[in-house]
Length: 382
Ligand SMILES: Cc1cc2nc3c(=O)[nH]c(=O)nc-3n(C[C@H](O)[C@H](O)[C@H](O)COP(=O)(O)OP(=O)(O)OC[C@H]3O[C@@H](n4cnc5c(N)ncnc54)[C@H](O)[C@@H]3O)c2cc1C
Image 1 (spheres, protein in one colour):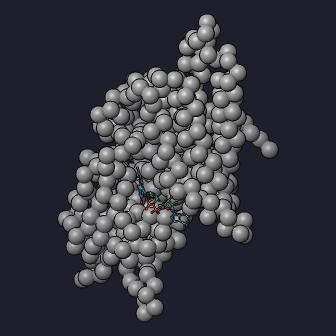
Image 2 (spheres, rainbow, N blue to C red; image 1 turned 180 degrees about the horizontal axis):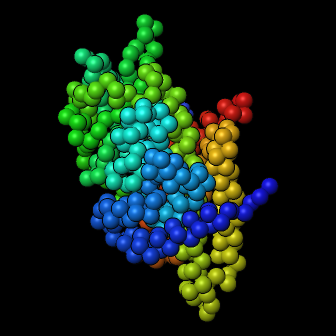
Image 3 (cartoon, helix red, strand yellow; image 1 turned 90 degrees about the vertical axis):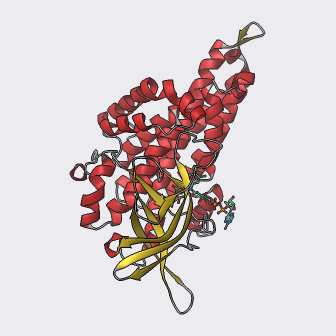
């Protein structure tokens, strides 16, 4: 076994780290406070060829692998989760369905703009009545004169409502059989299509500078060829997209935990109590040591999920385990980091305060912890 990263992966890590430290860190607090979408940073991510990392160069991507993608996401989340989730949702959820299942024309039309970061992609699966139970889709799409006419609502959708949002791929019920079983299909809806509206952004606990909104479709008409993949394959397709997405979200957990640890260590060495830096006290050292150890384990699990995918092997179980492990770790690491900061950890000028708020969603989005446990238990044969 070779645990060393390749030169390319190491170079990518240092490039993204430098970008994140020099260009994101100085504005992260303000973006979070003002809840402003980071247009300038997204533009820079596009210029750095980071908005389509795992897609081939022919479609405008960086032609890199899933491990490279995970490393880049990790480095972004080490500094700011709003920027990281914007890239992550765009890549894994927005672009991936078109790349994996789209027609040649859809790929030609969308992938170059998406991978360049000129346009953002979104994936609309969750509905008021369909979260963990994602198959319980209520949104309907019916064929009328060769067009799909869509009616329904989606909620908590990332990247759909910015000035540069290009399209959303949604799940919709396209038929119901005599026994009441739903046929679910994926349909691409470009922003600007009449009848497709993006609601007001949610007031969130964290990820404040990322775009999350409810969507509504009212007699929204798109041409029949906007179907993504075969009719009725929507359920299988979104499970695949979620599997891949879990690797990115797991990388966010590793990155956030690492960022929290770095901040906590730095602070512990500076802050003095009872005449010496608090980093000299065993109670503080134990926290730092435990978190560092958990991060090392979680990073290996996440990279293993990426490696298995890159090898063309089954990665669903490992991706679910990585997602479960890293979400919990992010919550714990950020809490310990706040604790080590004492009262200052509760003050927004310190990044750990934001990390603490940003961490919780990692145990909920892209499948809750309980859903990951279901996936893992099923794989165990339980
Ligand atoms: C900031 C943000 C961004 C998001 N971005 C997107 C996006 O871009 N696209 C998208 O489609 N969705 C997105 N989501 C939605 C997210 O994936 C869902 O919120 C998540 O899957 C949970 O669904 P739910 O909120 O309906 O919770 P529910 O499914 O209602 O779950 C409520 C609770 O019940 C538990 N539960 C449910 N079923 C079971 C069971 N069988 N056994 C045990 N426990 C169970 C859950 O684990 C959870 O604890 C986003 C959410 C947020 C908050």
